[in-house]
Image (tube, rainbow, N blue to C red; front, side, top):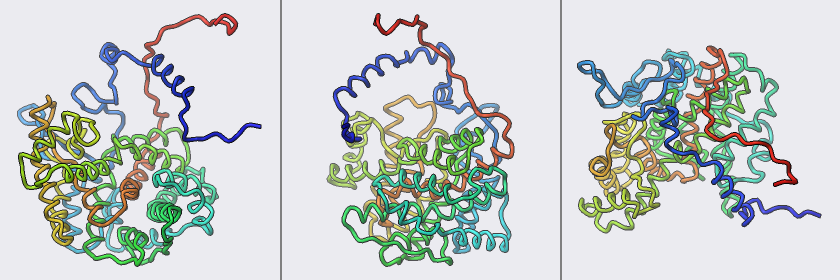
Length: 454
């Protein structure tokens, strides 16, 4: 009788098979130039290949001066509204803004006070899970990888939806709003389930219908459900800034690609989650936090600019931290002079640092933000400028809010699901053909050889 396999074990036989695949699948890098392949859908200058049209968000990183495109301070627009102005409005009126942002992205315009109140009430109505879902799905086989747990829960929700496969616009709108509402529950409960499996107390709080999304996250996560207004306010701003970022980022492009096949909303969102989970996309702020933790151990005097500079140089020389040659949190595929989301967070981080008594760390972050681009520019040829990106500060914010590392990327997903929903509906409304790019075959043809002769 066959025994159950060890799913985590890499045997010597598997290692040998992997090496065989590597040897038979390696493509000559020169072929990408020879066949004019836009690898990663980007040209040699790093500019993205236009693969679609959108009215949901716009990113400005260059402006035309005397007929030439020159780098400028980055700007981000949701449905034509500058995100900086959106955040400023929320700060000025001392209210929560993520729900308004979700409305703007999914409905296409800013809501009136009455429309916003009704939208919030609808989200509150949807902010519950099917009977016994927590017990039957989330508490069974909990995973330390909350993104996997979140994707599994999303796929399981399809079983509770009588119209799961209906891709008519009203039904997809309903599904997308429900997912915006329940993502905090799925992620936090998934974390609590794993936390319990590891021998800790289990906390499953019911959501308060009066809470905003940011308040819901903190209240569900903390044993006593307590939080300060400023903590919830800062988290709300983070959700606003992560809700959307153009149609070309990996997970949003995945949303368009999968939607174009005609599949259901739950499968689409699970695919987007799988994309966001990757450390090159949604997991970058975890790398920033871990890099700084290593830096604080290695650098003895956090105020010594020369010592910090030597550490950053060691990072680029692949001699420090994970030896990847990267200063995490520096640089972006689109922005050059500045990432507007990082600029918005910078000021809020300073205020939160004072409240939390962590100004020394804030000053270290500020020094790295200043020195990093200078050191990178001196070491490498850059086709554009480099600056701190949103991940540089978002992880520090979550750290000061005492949020566990396991929830950093799921927090990104809790915000971005609003943008994914907007793009899914946009693709459905304008869908003409399945998205299917071309790949150039560069292998050799060979005759079939009978098994007995091999």
